[in-house]
Length: 98
Image (cartoon, rainbow, N blue to C red; front, top):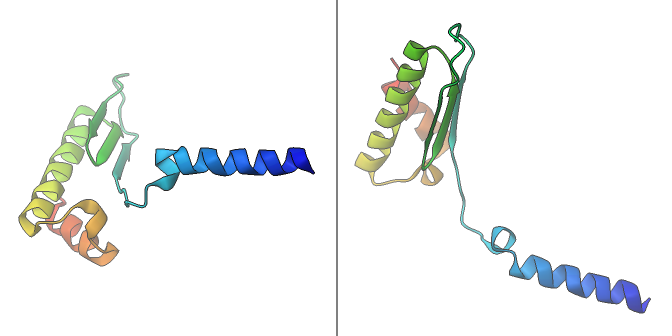
C-alpha cells in the first residue's frame, strides 16, 4: 500500500512537471504527403506549422506554394492555424489550391 501511494504521488509529480502535459495551448499543423516521385529523391520541407514529404519535384513545389499561400491567408486574417475552424480552413485551402 505504501509503495503504491508513493508511485501514484511520483507519477502525479512527473505529470505536473512535464511541459507537454501541462500546456493547454492548442497546436495544429498541416501535413502534405505525395507518392509520385520516380527519381529516387527524398523531398522534405518543414515549417512552423507544416511538414511536406515526398512527391516529384513539381508536386513538392505545388505543395510548398499552397502551404505558403495558406499561411499568407492566415496572416491576412490575423489568425494562426490553431485559431481557425475546420470550415474556415477548408475555405482557405480551396482559395489557395492550384
